[in-house]
Length: 349
Image (cartoon, rainbow, N blue to C red; front, side, top):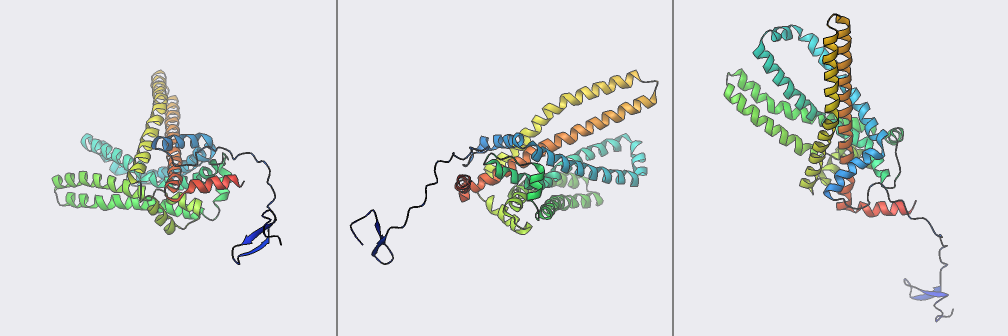
């Protein structure tokens, strides 16, 4: 073999001998560049992450809002059944309570605090929603839309784990509340009203801080189970590892995203609620002679208000779940170079 012919021969670096040059791979020809994608394949800034949640919500509305509506409809039916059971069991107590104005005022205040606590306890549902939406978030990097049926099929074998993760997080949130509330009841039983009030205020603050910290460290539990096919225990370790860095940035993104989306939903819902209230008042005043018409108007108004509450909660949690999945992939880009993996995967398609 002619050793000086560099065009037809090459050196085998294992043996140091010349050998015939291996044939060149066939040319692949021109291919169009990969699609830009809905979400950028790079780490996101603080504001970009918040905006990406809204963009993802608009890009796959059937997956995000549709799944949230289904989950919250089932959740509302469960709460309604529990509320009806409690009302039937404690009907004499409520009748006695209505005759005492001070007791009724205190009960209303407790009910309002309970509704706030219930809304915070429902954060556990975000793990189920984020797990469902995470499949669509991964596909959105290549500008591919994912429907609800497609996402549900892709979660085969992981659905039960997502439900167990949701129940686990809801149980942790409820357990924290009960553990911190128990001393208050003990103080009340010992006729120490001042100590009970002081501890109740302190317990509320401690529960809020513990709730935020635990839910942030485990925020990626549902996404990790859905995307990486992990068990619940492995998903907990995975979420804990990913949230070990950038804690305050993720806290600001999730907290501000939840607050802004809540304010936006309230801004849209409040005028509708005002119009329904006005129409209810007009209908009641014009149908004073017919109790049947008044009952029908009241039932329709309550139904509309409940439907608006359900829709607003579904949209709020749909955006929050979208934001959680965006932060999940963004954190992997920052710590594990996922952006390079996504770029290579799109180039190979």
